[in-house]
Length: 287
Image (cartoon, rainbow, N blue to C red; front, side, top):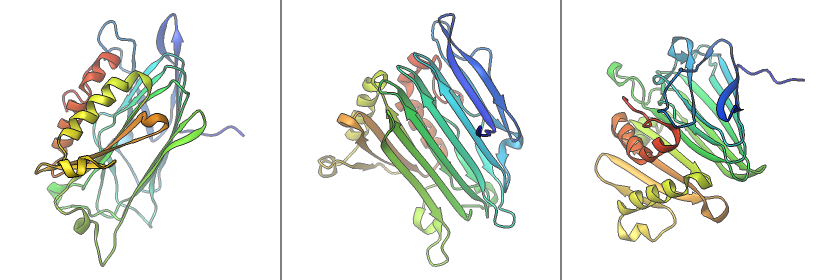
């Protein structure tokens, strides 16, 4: 039986340029393909993932399948933070994402953060299947909630799973799970931090970017911690760490926590700035 997806997107080479050959979406998802984002001379397809009302209501499930063909570049992003509304009758808001990335292709997934409202319950599962020479940039992040309304880490549940497979074999399996506990609420565990992010980079086309990010983040670490495989650095308002994964440590995962969402935006803009040469525009420009 054919799988039923809320959205399907296929990018392939057409007349020597990357193009979306299939773009399908139904409620509550919309796919917006702007006519021009990448600058002239850069062959990249940009797609905005948009939900009706800018969020996901309790009980709704979004599932999206993406295929990136040989030698193509696809950028998936959002227009603003994805809101997760209050759970009704204990029902979760859910997202499922599956990506197939072919030979020498590049998938850049750089959404705005998820923002869970008070009493929200959210879970997402994302699977990335890479060919041996495929490339991936993944940003997955979330905020403490609607701080202007006094909602700080007030959601009931947040669970995000990201799995990366190389030629069918798992190379990166990760789950972030936050559950409220009467004896130890989320706010007590996260303390002054209001935004948490993960950045994953993998692939031969990204090797120079990966190395420079590793050097910059590593330079912020204390000497004693720098000698370890997992390195961490605190400089006041932002905490970051990194580690490698995959064959020959070709992949990099960077984890960041900050007291303000804007600090992570700034961090991502700086660390991903060199992506402009591949995707045709600065990551998170104007954010």
